[in-house]
Length: 287
Image 1: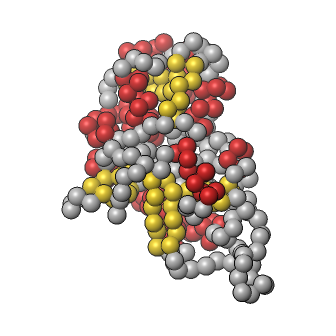
Image 2: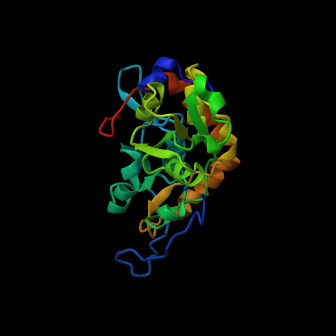
Image 3: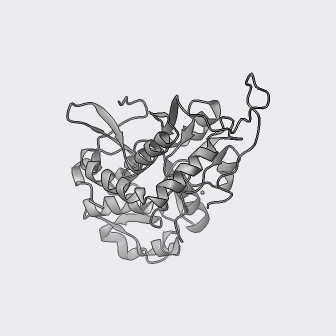
């Protein structure tokens, strides 16, 4: 992947897969009592909830006219799926830790935010088939201290950051015995805490961690990262029970997307725009 420049990356804001694709067969309230709720519907709008602070998966940039636009691997995949469903894609931005709550309230039709289908999340949402698997998670540390962290045991007594409500929190609490979890909403805040020596490390998805390292020679990947295990696939969340009957058409679109090797195209597009990424908040508007 083409890497972020240090300037642009500094501007960016910042569980295992089980039973993906589960859904229920509740019936909708239509005039035809025999119409199944999971019958595919075309037309209308597909509202996507995401957290646009996590390049290369979802971020925002200003186009040539200065208008804020969404971009990233997940955004491109969501657009492909919406097109296959015959719907217009509408993207809404929110902090990661509130996405599934808002989905359950009906604010969004789907959530895509580099999200794994963990047992805990399956209690509040249903998930599609996997659509992408990142490189394994990594531990970001200061380069001049990297040789101190050869194994996970070396983090005992250290302060280790992770984004709130992500599986990276579980890595710190479950795999890094004796480490003190520091949980913040924004990844950029976590990295700043590391840069200014307020914490000792940050656990991130692999591609995100690698972007920071490639842009900043003062950061490095700890050797202990090899002990964290493999990455889990990302899935698309829908409301529990799939009340809008979206999963069949979503899974069909994912299968077609895979057969056409579209993810390579989406990754390339995200890389091309990453240098234009700007800092956003959950309330930032976009076209």
